[in-house]
Length: 406
Image 1 (tube, one colour):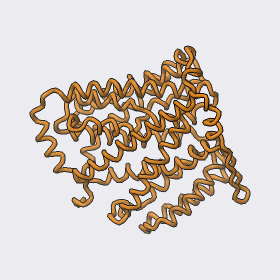
Image 2: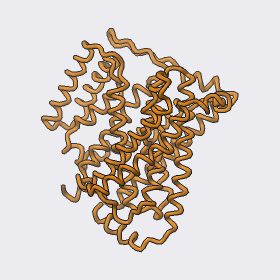
Image 3: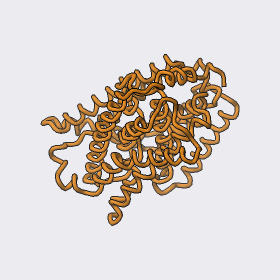
Image 4: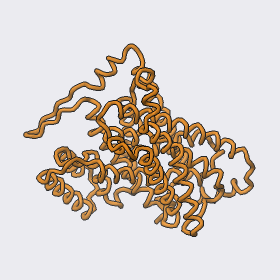
């Protein structure tokens, strides 16, 4: 891989600055949603949330409220962006196979342990068990946003490790949605979807990089998935996989990628947050919700399960000599970072909307995500601040060495 495909230190810093701003915007949307939903103007929020939008193309009739179009339509671009980011990171020199072992093991542990904790706490409630995947996700935007606030107190190796872990975490969430949250399948629509996917494969095979064919096939794929029983947002994943590697890494596509990134991080994700978080906390967050096992499973899964899974699997990988800590990164750094992986938000909220239809369970899920993410962010921040104050004689050299690789 040529050096042109590597991230320079300035490019990495620009990405963290951008994600920090996106994180601030997401938190602003969260705060606006909660304040609005807990005010006397809540009926206005509800009307915005439920604005009916009807689309008919031939025999295909789609009737969704605004929130439904965001969750099933605009989130396609979120999945496309995440998939492209995963592929680009895998192609870059900084994420060669030898560099992937530690974040991959961490991501696996960070998904398995929270799911197990949730299922144990809900073992006797079949209706509640559908939420097992909610605490498995890490919000990459908020994670990077929090990391960017620490400046030089966080080694670059820790930032890169956690971002890579979150990327594989997102990939795991995509696969979970594909395999566990699809409706009963309609074979005729699946046939159409398979034909469209075959077209995407041909575009990849012939190394076609123009946007138009992918857009057209993507629209057909999304529409066919609507009827097939497979969640339509996975159209974004299919398109992201189909884009040729040469086109993905070419410099001429940087402007297009920047446009997609900006739309996703600064419009789609905040809008999704605004429409999916708003809940009357003081009215709906009753002692019953705070004591039920859905709330507890998600909160404990995020705050305890995520760091426990990440730490244990990373420790096993290092003990087995399948991986090693990045330069300048110590186990106390890993502890603080592992706690921050408990910030589950965008994907967790999305999985909540797929897991439950009962409003009581949805409210419990949202409350658990907010509680678990807030506690994880707070405790993780304290640990990283305390660790950052400890002298580390190798940290400067480690930063220089890592920046050379980037």
